Image (cartoon, rainbow, N blue to C red):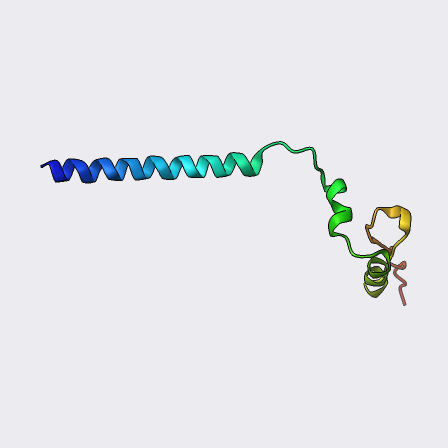
Length: 81
């Protein structure tokens, strides 16, 4: 009988510990931060030359002042034959 109570108690403590760990992890991942995508972009961005080459290969255009975003050219008007 005491063994059954001990097993159930360990099981309940294990579930409680798991929920506490999951809650802590969730809070640490979703906490507020002063960093934004714009602040972090420079850290992870390719060089301007590489960004320009990437945009040109995919038919877009890129300029230094565009914030690194490639801007696709608009499609030419459709001609009917």
